[in-house]
Image 1 (spheres, protein in one colour):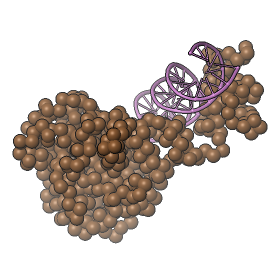
Image 2: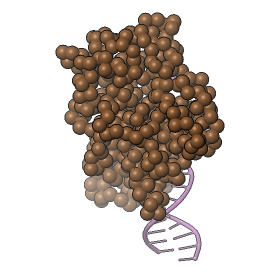
Image 3: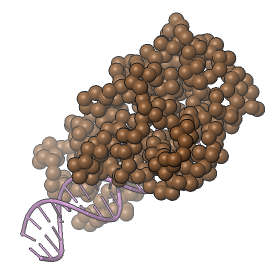
Image 4: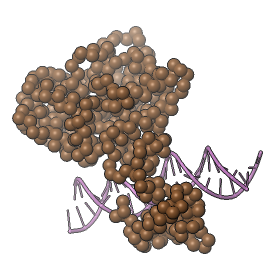
Length: 436
DNA sequence: AAGTGCATCAACCGCAAGTCA
DNA sequence: CTGACTTGCGGTTGATGCACT
């Protein structure tokens, strides 16, 4: 960000006024100038890295050793990798963060050429903002990975840091859709719903260009379930459709010639089918079964407020316009499809477990299930887009009194007891290094 | 075109651990 | 053993640029 560094800018000079005094010379603060960089690089070239207090004393720079070290390690080091994080790096960051938490230096150590500051900034801006809007922090497979490791560690009597990591704890403020768990059949065709889930996923914020390239080349698919409220969608997020990998495109291809099946899989009435295979953005005349929100595409008056902002991110546009003779359903249609109806809980800010991310929904289901073992099994059969089980929601709500996600003691059992079917975590077998 | 809000990132601050005399 | 000093880390802040209205 050298452009931001104004050489000899007044602000920089002013910044020195409050700094420490070095032998009567006030230490400078604020952005580094090119001249300062040159002096520092020259000094390190001659004397090597380290002994930063000596750098301060002997280089002639009016900078504290700390500042010199930071400047060197974050910007001047020759082995630094410039440019945006790659998809692989992002994946690695998520994976490592799921395991060790905010240990930026340790994470950076495993990403050659990247600095802790860079990773920290990345996490704080792109990832945590997703947490703010109610998305889960990690891709599902990484959650699973962390959990399975946790389980293993637990069996070995090792306490994983991921257990207590705050980012695995509940994220309040949004409602997780009700999910149904039953045994997952491997042969089951999961793509359509997964497609919706993927459309709702936004785990990373990656430049659309690299994303697009990765989407074409990746053989792994990541899906998840978004609980992001449409009105709070990240403005201009290019990553919104992250996860649109070739598996997904295959799924689209598989379904694009069978709109009826596709629509059924999505749970829409046939009136929607036509739109799925048309060039145009769909105008809904049907409604989502179980949803009380009518989907009327032509009326702003009938349009729910939460559906107002449905801009198609640039990436979606590009993907939607992918040169296919038989166009896929507009991705905007997926955008629309996954809009959940507004819920009275959504803005309540209540400390509900359902307000958290997917992970917590799983845990919540586990807890409530145990608490209500005698209740009917069908009680839990609410669909992702189905909010028609108010009784269940409310009763389970009451049983969940602990606002802290019980990962430490129940995650393993949760995963052993339940396999999501409605929330299809479509990760194919994770590759050897945990890729997704 | 101007104003406003948001995203990004460099840099600072405080604290803790390590080292050494 | 202790205190001073150094180094490293993580959290936070502030400046800047961009997008949106």
